Amino acid sequence: MAINTRSQEAEAAQRFFEASRNVDRAFRALRAEADDIASSFTHGAAQSRLDHALDELASAQALFDSVTGMRSRAGKDHKDH
Image 1 (tube, rainbow, N blue to C red):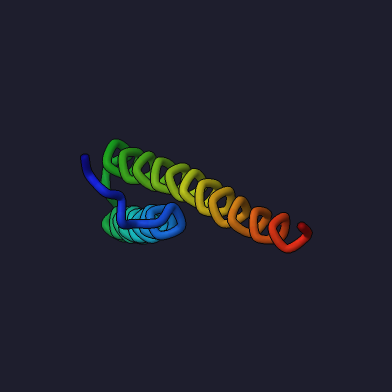
Image 2 (cartoon, helix red, strand yellow; image 1 turned 120 degrees about the vertical axis):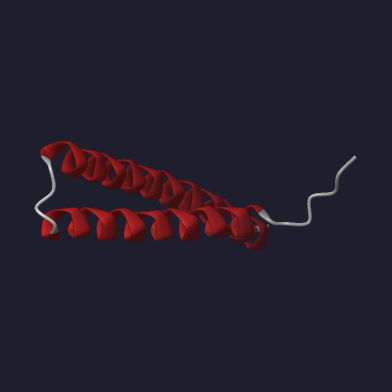
């Protein structure tokens, strides 16, 4: 049986970091396509990649917020008792 040594916060933070990096890469690719006066197909693909990366970032942020919020609430509930 594997032992999970990473906390939920660390996993959520890593996912958020990777999603942020993907948004940066997708934005740079889209900007490069716009500078190149590329075909509408490649520009559309770059735009789609950015849209997907932004959706991924929003999902990662929601996960991170829920994990850190759960820990925050659990700590607060523990102090109240």
